Image (cartoon, rainbow, N blue to C red; front, side, top):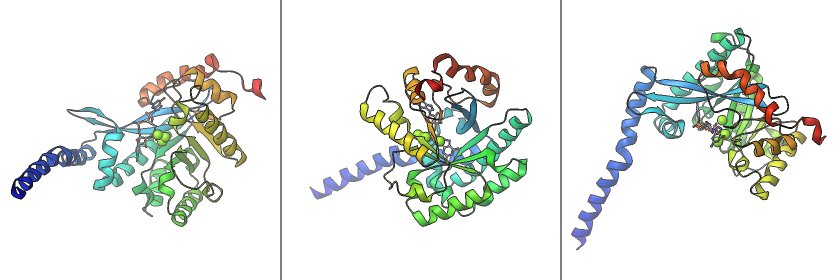
Length: 290
Ligand code: C2E
Ligand code: MG
Ligand code: MG
Ligand code: MG
């Protein structure tokens, strides 16, 4: 009987192996090629000033144009890139491409801040500072036009985090805490971290006008950010009602499908002025609530 059970287990194991580990390995090999064969690209999601409607920033969001699979989202391949270490060359590619695009836009008269998402693995490498410095210098982009997005979950080691953030500050780039409110870290770090911006996680924004607890959380994050002299951005705005709520509660900036999804560089150049109209069409003027 034991033998039978053992055999069954073995079968089960190899069946799992097929589904669970071979596919990621294939993907890892394909990701290697992706870098060599230029299959990675950046999309850009505008960040809008919720009072004026102006595009004040743009977030670089990576995509992988796989020859057979089509456009692969970062949720699928970033974890594999992180496990395999490929996130280091990929992250470097993102920084270079994002700085280059922002410099190009600047030269065309479109001055904006480019936000780049950084993985925990990149953030744990002292070399990150060099990589960023090189990316800026290569194209001659001034550091204040680059923003680094980190998440709360990367900040567990407080001493290290403070050191890294101070290095980034010295360099002159902006720092934003992404997905704010989803981590479990103590709020006391906020007073010691030299960050510029909090991005309210989209899980709270999606429930605005729906769940009073989420409304309270959003209002609280906005006033806390302002009391700490931080800029506050809402991500994942999908409806007019959510936009108006955020405007009424004086959230500074917003991103979301209601304003614009992530676009290719060309699409963004074409639609830039239309996107700037959206807040004017739907929003309420700032002084209504003041
Ligand atoms: P994130 O930085 O929090 O980015 C926001 C994600 O929400 C993006 O998905 C964006 O397309 C999506 N989004 C924007 N507006 C809305 C909305 O109104 N509704 C909904 N439901 N979603 C919205 P995306 O591009 O698939 O990226 C997912 C995550 O992958 C990002 O979350 C970020 O953590 C990571 N990521 C993206 N690009 C990079 C990168 O270059 N490097 C690293 N390390 N991570 C990246
Ligand atoms: Mg982000
Ligand atoms: Mg986010
Ligand atoms: Mg998110």
